[in-house]
Image (cartoon, rainbow, N blue to C red; front, side, top):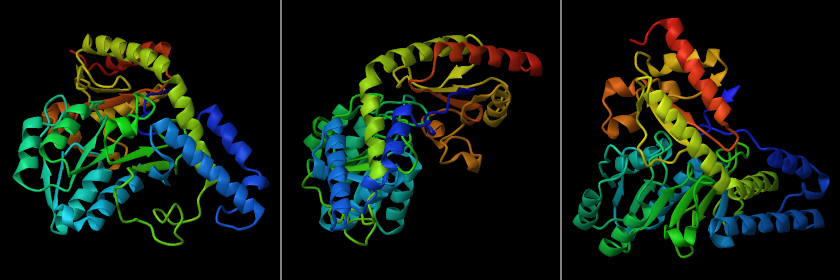
Length: 380
């Protein structure tokens, strides 16, 4: 099997599996809220995990909230901030290439009377900074929402430029950042990045599904999305899962340890595929400076889903649009908003890599593409 769909999800690493197995013991299965010694042990272990994750992310322990996924983190950050900070203004600025978790929150805000402004992006997927500055100066803005690495193209946000622009033009505006696809693939130091809220997902870094993190900078106030027993300092009620928190910690620790070496290997795979696919009349849609973990390509003569299922015959797994939108069978809105014509976007396939992918897999992928074109006699 060749798995090139790591932006949709990754498979749990051996270290994560081992941690989960170790956690399935009575000694740490107590409720962290219980007063007996089993509860106290679980509570201490949970706090230790929060501290470890915070250190790995360049944050302070109280700034880390464990969630079920990045979608929950995004909803909590965006909706929670706007609900709590009514005096900050009713304008939110973003782009139409954000993940659906962000876009759906913004659409809900717009329905409730908020002014949501979408800054256009270029062919490279980056926001138009002149338009962003204009939007920030036109009216008091409460929040800006951007994605560090686009999940469909790998486009990297010019974060430092946007932070500098915001701080110069509208320093009171808060910044929510989706860093899901960046985690474990590029350096993340939250205090140095100068964002106010940030979301992460465990299953994108070889942890298990059901694990996520929300960072909320000290001093930023938001309303919780989930109410109940007041766990995690009231920011996310519900009995804490030490098992899931430990799984996230293990995956993050391993991702950070292997990041430098895996980046070089993945960049080599990406460069090889760009060269070989371009030679076969495929059109590379990811920007030249995109994160190498993502490669979006349009195949001549094949619509996206057709190529996906052709590759599946060879036990090769890729995706078309984001997994959160794939079942709608629509052309990628990310590509269309980035200026890709509809016909080309309809042929687009996303390849996404992790540290476990190899050059041999890339070479076998090219052989499969050649065979597909030969068998179906599509290439002219």
